[in-house]
Length: 258
Length: 138
Image: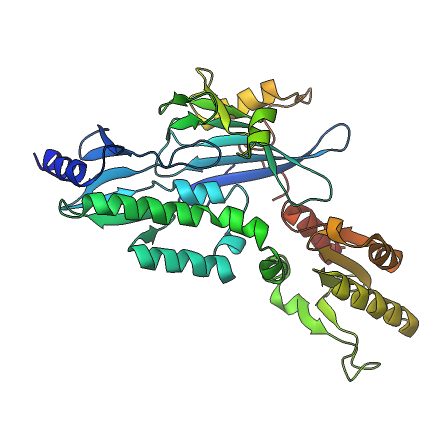
């Protein structure tokens, strides 16, 4: 049997901690000790497709990442670069959300370890996101606004062409709304918050009509005095993006449709 | 109704507790393996970008290992729950799971979650949170 041949070859080249469990015609579960911090073990399936054999995670890794990260966050910027580099380094393919690696009898054991290493490295993007969120916040902000607001209704880096030809007071994203525009500020740190505060005061002095909206990277990390000064003039705030995507969407869409 | 994504279908639903606490209901169905799904109740602490999984009703598409108890769920339906001991151990807080015969599909998992986690169904509810067909504004 071809199946027995490849499993025998795989078992021979893998170590004792890897086992194979028949799971239907041309299909084996590969049991490894590798898993995630929540105790779930990595799915590895060895399956035949036509005349070739593949290792597959059956979509487990990307589905798990989707608990925390949406498509935009996962498949753009630095995160996407890590995924692409990892796939390339280990020879894996992303087949519409399924990680696969073609293997043969001669390299199956080695392939199992390359496959698990690559899959776990991609899964670790979840941890990396928490630690290095500063480098992705502005990407996430831009992607979110692009997703919610039609291109014709948003302008990045807007400044008042009448009062401010030198562009000293800039809005991160101006959104055209029915009543008055939304001025949306990305607020990753105290410096940006202070600049946004000064900008809003200047707009008020000029008598501009607008609705301010501030989106923090992590509001809880901001000095209370800096936060209080912004709150005095920027009445609508979101404390962070993750978990607030739908609330931000609802708020902006409410103004778009008002 | 679940939305089709790469390799799976999904739905998130933001919830608010009676005391104003923020929660998220997360549903996923793997396209490649019908036995692989979770229904998750996650808590969103105020002023934080963290999402803490309190309960996770998992399919039988993968094995699970309880690191502290040295027990396993081998390709069986299982229920994760947040515990203090795993939080203190540095693992994910929902790293403890027990095998369950109460669920065999994502919709079973959702029903179990609703039953276990203090949800109150509206009196006139024919369906559950819009997941079975009607929309909730999306």
